[in-house]
Structures are given as structure tokens and as C-alpha cells.
Image (cartoon, rainbow, N blue to C red; front, side):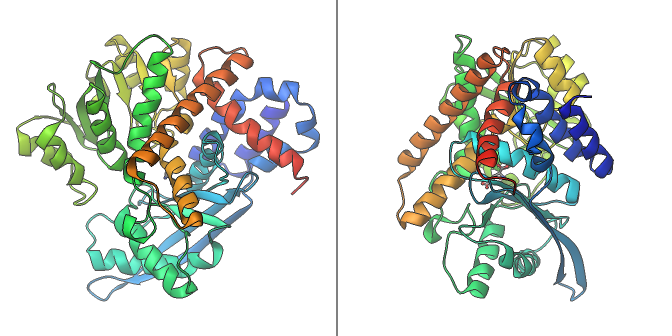
Length: 445
Ligand code: GLU
């Protein structure tokens, strides 16, 4: 048995009830064969055993009263995974599917994603099985206050800096920041994704979507192609999806689908103008279903099917884990799709990724493609430390450069380890190497 398969077996034995976490670990470790082969010292140092075990996992009760006065209890999580290259950094997800395995998968991904940004950020993730859908503003506020009342003792601007993720946007960050400030009696950069009037960075809301478009531009350029004139299919229409559409339009492409768990909207003309204005708020402000978009503009609504059946040049899953499976992958390629970019976290199943790689299709892995969000969170931290803020264009230019650098180092790692053009392996190797070097230098901790 190899070192890698031993560690993988140990993870599976220890946490058999965490399939998403096992999937995320398998994804990274299987890419590391050539690195481990050239670094035998990692095994003696127990490096992989340490990297798959979070430094700290916090699980807590979140009691709150609903609008009827009934007390509800949710479960809160913060997994502080790895602080080798900086304080723990990563979002908070509020969604009924959240459990320890989901937060561990997201936290594990975050370690390597944050490393790829080149900024000094470790990896962490948090969340709750609370569902903000259908809750009043006051209910969301009471929940966020209760969540932060426990979380505040575990975080800090030099310790752990949470942000948003699925179900946590500007509103939730505001309520959590307010409660932190009140308890800690300190106005500090302890969360990112803050409003610009109170320490947030310009271009943070746009960052993941814009960064995805910039990364796709780099991928296409490596094969002598441009985004201009391409048709794109996407799934979600939250923060990532909507700002991705905005940037894709600016770059001359056309986004023809959006979706939710019930079906998809098909708009062959492309989503722009007043349609995009309407879509911007549909989920992020009103948490309304995708069908409402079709109804509003008389567009085609396809119930119960996946958007990946629509012929497009580029597919960009922007919603959630495992939303694009092998069947979808085969259909996309059969319909002429030439590029897949993962804007959500782990949206493609493992067999779908294997298929893309086998077919030598341009495949951008999540860790690289969607790193723009956390990268601008890193820039928000820098601005908070300086007590200064950059203009939108300054932040956007830095984001663009960071995405180009991520592409370059990903591509270079692929070349160096004999898997030319395989950005999946390149991203995992490049992200891992920096963290591994830091862990080796810091001793057995
Ligand atoms: N939730 C985002 C991600 O998955 C952003 C995290 C952050 O800004 O800290 O990377």
C-alpha cells in the first residue's frame, strides 16, 4: 500500500459518515502522487495524516426564538482546519444540508484555495443547518446574534476571519458583525464581506463571479481562444452566478441558462439588461425560485431537468456540491461544450471530473476558478489593517492579476509534474506545496 492510500483508508475508517469530506480528500490526495514520490520526508513527518485532521472543530448549540415566540435550536459549526500559512479564513454556510462532514469538506478545500491566492490565509469554514429561506428579517437577526454569541470567543482578526457562503450574504454578515462588536467591544476586521460603510471592500460582492470570468479568459487564452462570442450555461443565480453573468456580458459572451433544484430557465438571447437587473435581486435579496424569472420575462422554464442538457460552449456550475454528474458531463461534451469551470465548491462529481480529464477538455477546478472571492476577502483584511480603502478599479485590477497568477502557477505545476494542461492536478499540487513547505518548516504541530 502506498502512503497516500493508507492515509485515505484511515480517513474513510475514521469518518465513514462524511462522504463529501472523503470525496474532497480523495480529490486532493490522488493528485499528489508525484509530489509525495519526490518528497519521502513527508511520510516520516506524518504530513498527510496531519493535513487531513482539522486543527480544531467547534460544534455548538444555537437557540433562538421565532416570530411566534417558539424557541428553535440549530447546530453551529466552525472548523479551524489549517493555520500553516495564515489565520483561518473561510466562509459561513447557512443551509439545512449543513453537517460536520460538509463543513469539513469545505474547510479542507479552503486550505488549498487560499494558498493558491498567494495571500497569507489559512483554511477554515463554518455554518449551521439553519435555513434562512422563509424566515423574517427579525428571525434571521436573532439567529445570527445567537450564532455569534458563541462564535465570537473562537475568532479574531489575527486568529480566524469568517465570511459569507451559501445562505450568508451582506444582511447576515451585518447582523453577525454588529453582535461581535457589541460583545467584544472592538471594531475590527473580524469578518469579511462587510458593507463598504463599515469596513468592507469595494468589489467584494462581485469578486467570485468576476474572478471566475477572468480565470476562464486565461484558460481559453492558453488554447488560443477568447470569451467573446461564446455561449455559456450556468446553474445558480446567487452572488456568484449574477456577477459572473455581468462580467461575461462585458467580455462579449452570452449566458443562456440559470437553474435551481427544481429546473432551469433557458434564454437563447442571453441574460442581460433589465433581465439581469431583475435577476440580481431574485435570490440575493428576495430568495425567490428560478421559475419566477421565467414567468416575469416569458422565458422557457424546463421543470425537473438539469441545465447541462442545453448546448453551450462553456459550462459554469455556480450553485453547490455534486450538481454536475457523469451523465451531465457526457451530454455537455456530446453537445459540443469545450470548457467547464467550477465556480461553486466541488460542483462536479469525481467521475465527471475523470471524464473531462480523460477527454482532455479544458477543465478549471473550483479551488482555482472560484478563488477570487476569498482573494478579495484577503484584500479586505489588508485594507482593514491599513485602515484605508482602495477604489473599485484598484481592487478589481488586483483581483484580475491574482486570477492570472493562479492560472500561471496552476499551469506551471501541471507542466512540472508531467501532466501538461491538467489544471485539476496543477491546482491541487500548487495549493498543497506551499502549505506543505510551511508545515515542514514549523515542526510537528
Ligand atoms: N465562501 C467563499 C469561498 O468558498 C468565500 C470565503 C471568504 O471570503 O472567506 O471561498
